[in-house]
Image 1: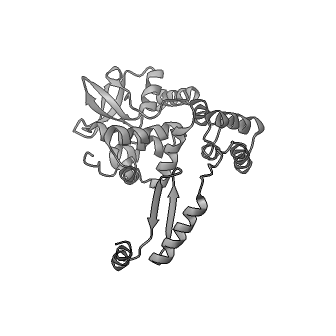
Image 2: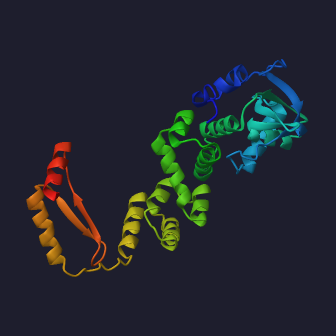
Image 3: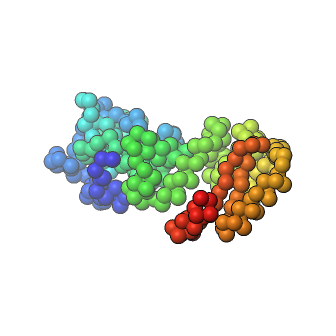
Amino acid sequence: MAGKTKGLGKGLGSLLGDAADTGKRNDSTAAGEAQEVKLRLVEPNRNQPRKEFDEAELQELADSILRYGVIQPLLVREKDGHYEIIAGERRWRAAKLAGMKEIPVIIRDYTDQEAAEISLIENIQRKDLNPVEEARAYQQLIGDYGMTQEELSEVLSKSRTFITNSMRLLKLPEPVLMMVADGTLSTSHAKVLLGLENEEDLKKAAAQVVEKGLNVRETEALVRSLADKKPRPEKKVLKNQTAYTKVENDLKETLKTKVVIRRRSENAGRIEIDFYSLEDIERILGHIN
């Protein structure tokens, strides 16, 4: 894992400096301070976790930019002859909509991993991501950069359990994932539905939850009812079980400890013998020898 960016979990102010904290633009072009660049030279990051942007909200922001300008600079890095957005794609889109020719940016030198972490943090802190985008962003950081869930938890100031539960959503079938992404189905309902192993049952249950407006408790009951209807495989009855049970009891009596015979077939299996200390093992071996 690359060296951790300082302050990643402590808010965007620690990343953007005074320009973000005060809302004031700094016209100095010193490294790390806000400067104006041509809008056409700024491009979004293809790995930006946020994929959906509300058009009405963008128009509102564009109207504000026309009146007041872009108050908070974008965070970018130089890449392949252009400036790649790390944080602020929504402002960039609105500025384009408003017809701006230049836009204030803060240029920083970040690795791919640091850029991905910061982009995710910005969206999480502003609650811009839907649950599926957030889960996929976690998956990308883990898959692309070899981060563990513990490292991700530390970087994002999220509990490991939260990240694990978020990523579990990605086990849902795509149609159900779309329902979660657009808010038709809540994450609480979705997590309950993950209790169904059969994909078709899960999709049908999701449709029922939405159609009937079921709450989480009613959804749990629905999942239980569907799970109970699932045919259970017949338990295979092995022959000569009485003889094996007698051997098991004899071994318990002889070895003075718990013994379990687990059969895989008529004439194969394994014997499990419990021990509680090194001396116990030596005692048991003495009986076997």
